[in-house]
Amino acid sequence: MRVASEKAQTALLRLTDVLGAEAWQTRVELVPGTNETKVSAKLSAGGYALTLNANGAVHTTKVVVE
Image (cartoon, rainbow, N blue to C red; front, side):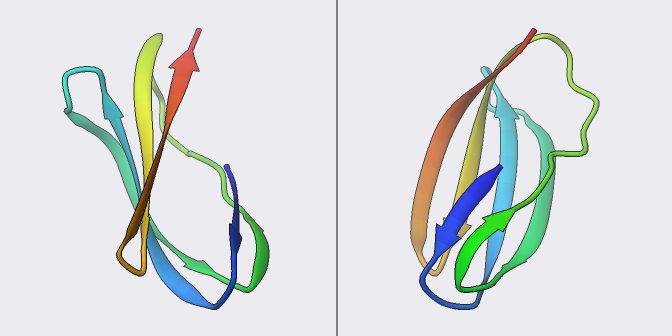
C-alpha cells in the first residue's frame, strides 16, 4: 500500500473482511512524502476493506484477493 503524508505521524492500518471481521492490523510510522508498506497477512479469496486512520482522518479502499 502506498500513502502520501504531509508530516510525520503514526497511522493504524486495518484490513477487514466483508462481514467486518478484522483480518489484519498494524501501526506504521509515516514520514513526510510517499510511504509504502506491505500487507503481511495470509488471506482467503474475497473482498476486504483496507482502512488507514491517521491524525483523525480515515481513508478506506476496497481490496480484492483472487
